[in-house]
Length: 286
Image 1 (cartoon, rainbow, N blue to C red):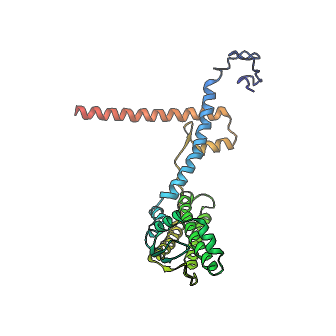
Image 2 (cartoon, rainbow, N blue to C red):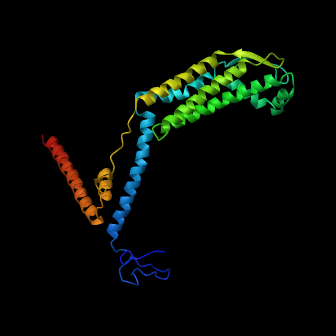
Image 3 (tube, rainbow, N blue to C red):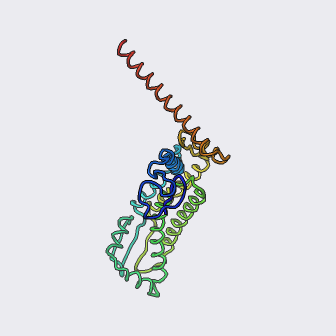
């Protein structure tokens, strides 16, 4: 329910006229300038909190040479997956295959593969262990790719509270998933359906994952400080405005100081404009 800005009494839905039925004040224009300035104050404080987040994100992502390098080291491991990850030999129940396999080959294989093939492969006593290890290695490989993308996105909020713990946790989970995937594939027992060895791509992928972790550590050791853009409320620096509010300055005192600061800002802008105009005139005349 609305209320009169002057007498603060509640207005009914039937009180549709511009004048308050209690005090007679024009509800639309009464103290309009002050109300607009109060709304402007709220908007500027909200902008300040938004700008803090933007400044933190910017510093986290491109705040130094190392953080820029981290952008590339976070994503470059995916390049290694397009190299031969494994040299593999497949037979029934899989489609026969003998040769190098990268991430695209794995995708194409699964795109054509019936999921029931894996179920039957893991249900047979003679191939159960091999089937489980083969499946787990593929799942862990895909998990590592997901972790890589999540880590890249989390770089943007690395300087947020718990950002360091979050990044390190992802780094460790990332490394563990890659190591576990490599180990699971390497220890697949002899069977007639699947077998092979790790390819150069797997080792390069692991090396790049370690490199990413090292760069992440170096970035946090830089101890970057967020440089916040200066924000104002009615011409008063935001920090000074908060101090005035905390010490209990009245709205009248705040507004008086705001008018003073805004006048100073306007006079400074006019002075610069006069100087600029005078300089141009001197160049034209001279």
